[in-house]
Length: 365
Image 1 (cartoon, one colour):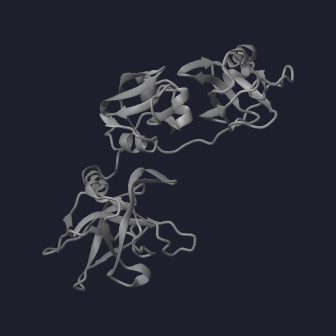
Image 2 (cartoon, rainbow, N blue to C red):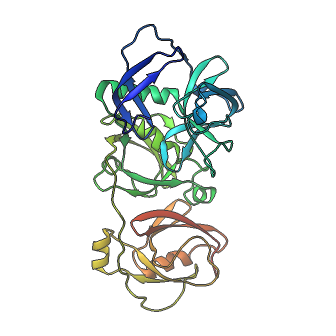
Image 3 (cartoon, helix red, strand yellow):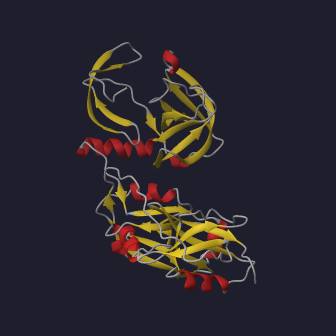
């Protein structure tokens, strides 16, 4: 345990002990770099975690519950896993028995090479449940290189809020297959905004790397050095478009959301989605910092999709065409022109967050 420690002692298997100095630590990866003054130390061979295959055998070494130098075996259960509390590390998932005290121990392949550092477990009891996660050794080495040279770790950001592209969303945007990261908000004045990224763009390639799913984009961007100017490819209005973006650095977090009042409905008439809508006042648009949108005052009938009372609909997307919701009459007219059997997508603002919601089937003709 390095974080918050007053003194750190390194104990080797030959019983030698050394006082260690912390060079730097990175909380996001749970990796620290320490230094001891010693010679003749044993070393391990490092492997390439990218060559690991699901089903391949691995060994974990640690001190679970205080039992030193315990070895457990398992297989690679998955690669490039994102965890709810951390989406910048492509964790290696294994079913090797890892328990409290295993953290920080090495994960070996069958060639005796270290491919990861055991980091955490998924457990409802505090003990092993078959879900263990390790930091790939190449990620850990990049962290130690930065800690050694600068004392901290820099990660890239471009200033977008993204979501996964489902099959229904891909159909709505005219994308041949579900892939990429759908942009549902762009930070005003941020790197993506300056590069020309727009809400409803789907980022399908970044710095020459394909973005197969939205979870991959934060890792790819995070691994890009701040200040780098890189190419990105987006899917916009049924075609791909190339942009250049200058990557910024991830800042410290962040703000709480706020609520705003809504205008009352002018008349309680539901549209083909079963939604009763009303206009936003100029003051509300200014407060929310949006140019257009209509408010959902009521959801009637059987809900289709996750549209809720209080949502602000910003746009309607159908077959790759993005129609901004500038008024209730204009939005309902665009909705009425769509065949009832198709799936449409709504760009919705809820609180301070934005997302895309697919709705299957419309009422009426």
